[in-house]
Length: 246
Ligand code: NAP
Image 1: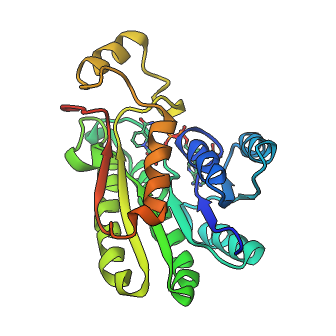
Image 2: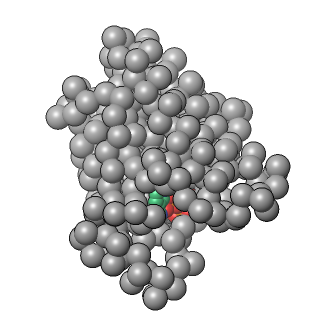
């Protein structure tokens, strides 16, 4: 049997990178996607190949329908199918609600929520034909409870919940499941701006006493993609170390 195919949006760095590496180790042929970090994507593929895995790289801005179409169609044209889609691409730009410009609002909504809608819509065409698919959306605990300074980001991440549950209900009977992973504070470029004292203060509010790693999230995604999670559909798994509040 040919290896399964997994496409991960925004896998040139951070959590997406860890997910691509983890799924490749699980035997998937992976489709790595970057927008700006081409060198990062190439490094991810090099590491995958060094470990005996296979994959391809697709440069595409998945916040647009055309970019998402290019990403998914290249995956399907290269491997003939797509079984797992991880909608991981996202950006954040902290700003007080009253200072968020219309342009910033659209950028954050399109990058975090639009991208998942577009990629899922294109991938579903192939998944439904084959009556099998696993869609895993990367949200955030901020999408579950909101956060000061992140109204646009929180709204987008919250929207992923509605999108995920709708896909789960619309396509469950046709072999496609959709689930949400909501990370807490994970050490990546996205949280790199936090200084040491901010990190220690955050860690104090986490039951495990530490920030998470990209690998902490990747393991959960690999589980949701696996047959062990076949009966999990339309739900959210928090990966936040027991974060009490944000
Ligand atoms: P990161 O280190 O900043 O990496 C973001 C990734 O998304 C990069 O690979 C970037 O690609 C890609 N990306 C952004 N916009 C894109 C676009 N329009 N098209 C294609 N790729 C795009 O962030 P991260 O911490 O790994 O976050 C990954 C996901 O987890 C995001 O959805 C984020 O919201 C979520 N999350 C993160 C945390 C955290 O604490 N880090 C917590 C909760 C949720 P390029 O560099 O190539 O442009």
